[in-house]
Length: 218
Image 1: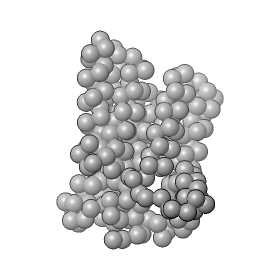
Image 2 (image 1 turned 180 degrees about the vertical axis):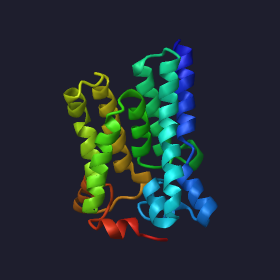
Image 3 (image 1 turned 30 degrees about the vertical axis):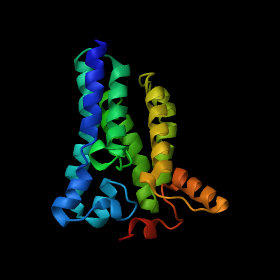
Image 4 (image 1 turned 135 degrees about the vertical axis):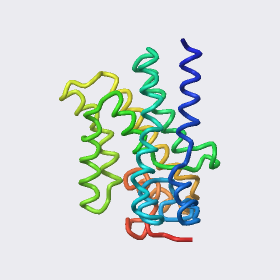
């Protein structure tokens, strides 16, 4: 069974690596999303710099990238731990895709896809945080807060115990991606570098203004 689990996890990474947002930018507008806005290959950058209708197919595909291997794991009797591992690895593929030199997205859609399989109540929970962030003009801190608070919510609604480990993995992957930031260079000044790293963790950007960040162009 471990060989099957390994093959499934490898497949999850390759599936997760398919950069749907990047392809949307290339096919619809002929641009490389890595040079626009936050520089992430994400639905939010498709919304800002490509076209708004494409967010739906891009988001659904990114969701399925993690949901499918997690669902397959359960159907094959490999258990919840393997399902969680497959979903997280698919998200790692989304964030660090082999097809784009490991420069990818932020992982929220794959996280939601995984939750729809192992803990469906997690979907409206995270969505409510993202909606609140959108209304307030900055979803990044609310996205991180939703992942940190997910185990508490799962405990309240008597969700599966494995959600604690899944949420821990999601938080670690999220912080790692925000800090790595598709290898954007850091300031040379020590104080400025510290400020940028803190903004990356909590705000998912290098500067204070959210609007200036997402609207950047080459």
